[in-house]
Image 1 (cartoon, rainbow, N blue to C red):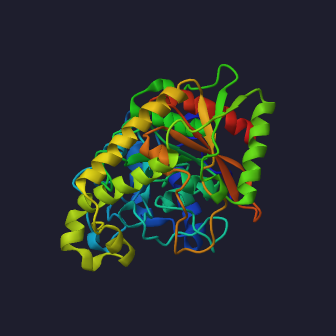
Image 2 (tube, rainbow, N blue to C red; image 1 turned 90 degrees about the vertical axis):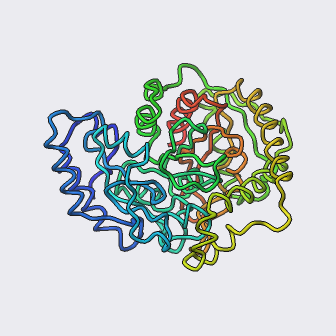
Amino acid sequence: MSEPLSVNSIVATRPTAKEIARRVDASIQAQENAIGAWHWYDPKRLTAEAERLDALPHRGPLHGVPVAIKDVIDTADMPTEYGSALYEGNRPPSDASCVALLRNAGALLVGKTVSTEFAFKAPGKTRHPFDPTRTPGGSSSGSAAAVAAGMVPFAFGTQTSGSTIRPAAFCGIVGYKPSFGLIDRTGIKVLADSLDTIGLFARNVADIATVAALLAGRPTLAAAAPTREPRFAVFRTPSWNLADEDAQKNFEQSLLKLESRGARLQTLEDPADYLALLSAHETIMNWEVPRALAFERLTGSHALHPTTREGISPLPGLTADDYDAACALAADAMQRWASLLENFDALLTLPARGEAPIGLASTGDPIFNRAWTQLRLPCVTVPSGTGRSGLPLGLQLVGAPRTDGRLLAASRMAEAALS
């Protein structure tokens, strides 16, 4: 198999979309039976779309760049079934905003990747690209696996707890959860309205930055590069003891590599009640999810996976006052963390408990992601060595609110130090 495609190499060399489509299809045909990354893929449609793009008189800035789209994100010319039998054959009337923007830029939309049902808990069919006995993570399992396997250089995911950062760490690629609202999420299936965020997957930070700049309408994101030695806060979190020993050891080794490249590190103490923030995230999801999926819960529960059916049922005893109190606690924590993180280029912490766990019944634990999603902060995972089984581990970088450019610059530095 040839060297995997990258967004920026395609942008620089400008091959035809049809040439790219041939390479994508060859990679998918060679690997899909083992991995199961795709919920919907039609090679004839891909070829026709590539020919249509090549016939256009004006090529967009992402002409021919292959993109995979998580199945909870609407596409007008492909089914969008939200990972659920309840929506079999569903054809949205329009593209999601993020899809429309990439289509307009000339991107080659390849197909729909596997998602857990409604991007929630019930796992899909996708297997880890390097060990089929393990999960690739969730809920953006298909997107992470497709990028890690070299089928596509870029894919969309989403994150409500840890569904971009965790699978990126498991699969050894770069995952980016932008600041909440930085990339418009019109046209994605809502799971928890105050938390849902579009996520991006690629094989390197530069590719992430190129696409994020276009989607967010912020060209400076693509040029983000460290201009001085970055200053990092180190936060091991009160959940540190839940991480595997090899993940802890790899984290400490990563810190040493960053210091050797001139990074300045400062251990951080918890400025708020971190564990209470995790509890608030759980309360907010338990309140918002049953309401976002009220139609499915009230009229279509017979067609849902049992795990989904249970998970979207209202929690007995949970009241609006409980929800309001959790939102107030989260808002206070946002202010505290924002004030603290503005003094750093990024916070360094774990993205997951360790290597991807064995088995497909669970997609892994989002314990190291939930707080940052609740705080609406931008996050990046970069690959950072391997664990005891030789599978990928990652390092998570978290930025202050709306400092995505600074975070991406710091992530490029970390990526270079840890590669």
